[in-house]
Length: 151
Image (cartoon, rainbow, N blue to C red; front, side, top):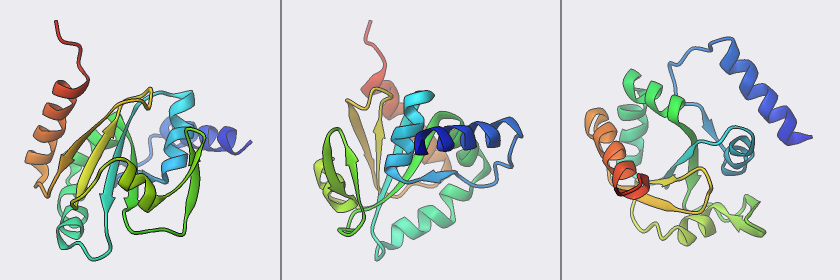
């Protein structure tokens, strides 16, 4: 029932053309549920509360209109606190905290952006702070190298 409500809510906001002045950040399990009905890549922003560069990304890069539009159109965007051991959720038949999932994705520096392809089987990382243009360039290059079929 929760999945149905989430899916209907996402479809409602998409249909009324909600303002794209900010990235629509979801919890990891919300993004996974949305992906089941409308497959898209997940963009996981792995951060810590003490990370200055993470705050700079939030303030500068993730407010840039081109970044906001690109992320909202192409991904389910997720914020994941690499040090949160309290909040837990199920994924792939296992229970994880945010910290455990960050460790399972082998994130060791912050900020770090993990792209998960729609089948939720393969991931790729883009570590480090980037201004808007460099972030868009880096994420596109990462996707091309990691997920596009080689001919």
